[in-house]
Amino acid sequence: LNIRLKQKKVKKEEKRVLRAKLAEVCATELGRDDESVAAYKNLVEEDETDEVAVQTLDRILRAADRKDDLRWLFEVRVGRANTAHKLDILGEWAVLEEEAFGAP
Image (cartoon, rainbow, N blue to C red):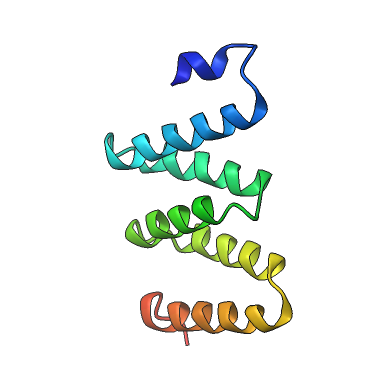
């Protein structure tokens, strides 16, 4: 995957797909969470509407108990949501803060 990513003739969308696959392999096969998180964060920063990247990153961050990164992801999710959905996300975030992070 890395070799294909470095080739100059690879189209932007194909590079994105390859980077997502590489991030997935880092997380699931190699246990390299830091690299996986960095790759998924980059994918989300490039396209906040990529629900697969958002959900996968959320799952990895929760499993690794990466509170600050999860807070960043919630900020992204809130920022892109419509008003009605923002309330749902903020409610989910509040529950996570209280139950998982121990914040009142």
